[in-house]
Length: 318
Image (cartoon, rainbow, N blue to C red; front, side, top):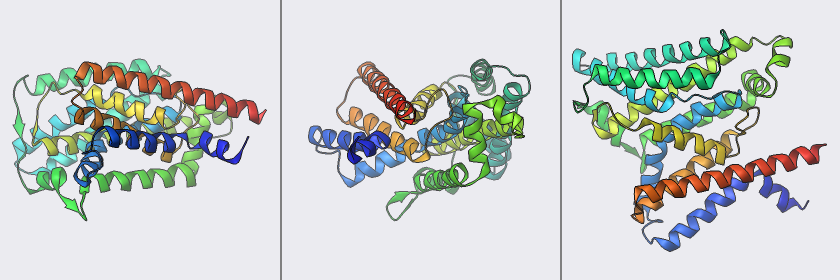
């Protein structure tokens, strides 16, 4: 295999993202404008937080279906505490505590009781969706006003939104943990062979619980940032859309859905690709139904390509 072929195989998402950006820039003249580029980076923040949390869960050989609707639930927790206490600090603390508790619950059920993560987090999805409707009746809203919410939702630094810079900070932190600490090694090892990892003396239960807690915390941050941007909270928002885009981002970025393989850089490029797709289809005024069909086909194609590339790597290694 040529050097270029090897680079393309390992970094195909970079080429695909750049190619996609060039194509859409030809179709829509507004695409490459500075304002639109900044808008894309702002739009991907909630999806990016979901994708980052999901990345660690999937690499560990699990999945967290609750993240999208949990972000809506956490935003409602924020709104209720802010409305009752009249201060943003209790609301932020409540979101952090609630997200860590939910992640701990999911982690214990999966790691301790050995229940399938698909079933556990699907149950959690239904639970938080129902709780959101119980706390705030459908059609009701709680408005978020104040300097903090304006800052989180729309403040900029050097032309970039602070929320995006926060996302970058988390990705860098995740990169360090994943690539330069034993925790990253353990997570990958669990995804490849959980029993062998346990026999090697690793506390698999603690690692898996920690992964789900981090996933849920990312969901809490997503809910906080999204609600601050909108300026209100209400039940019935489509959190599952965030979840699906987040999963799509990491899969397109080369994360193996079976666990045990993935890169933080690939996940970030996959996130950019999803941001470009969503933004471009909106610029072209593509109807929502066609929008979903197009995204579905793109994700399916990306999954197929990544699977073939993974298979070729396996064949070459043997």
